[in-house]
Length: 105
Image 1 (cartoon, one colour):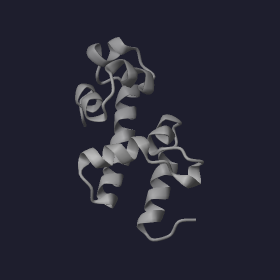
Image 2 (image 1 turned 120 degrees about the vertical axis):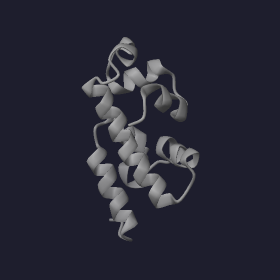
Image 3 (image 1 turned 180 degrees about the vertical axis):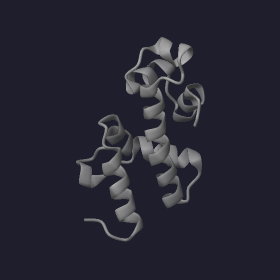
């Protein structure tokens, strides 16, 4: 799994933002990078990101942009990142798998 520093750099965010998104104190990133909440957030993002990159066939940087900024119409314009923040990883993965199989409904 990607380190918190590497994640923040790749996603263009400050460590303070990463801490807020993962619902941990900023000190946790440095003192306890194996914190379960932090690891779960990083893992959820990685899962969705990997699927987006695989499906899109785009570069990692382009996939990051899609993850952060490309709204899903069926989720009222929320981005995959928005949905991960809401704890809706399963919904995102189901949607992506539906698109990948050729069915969107």
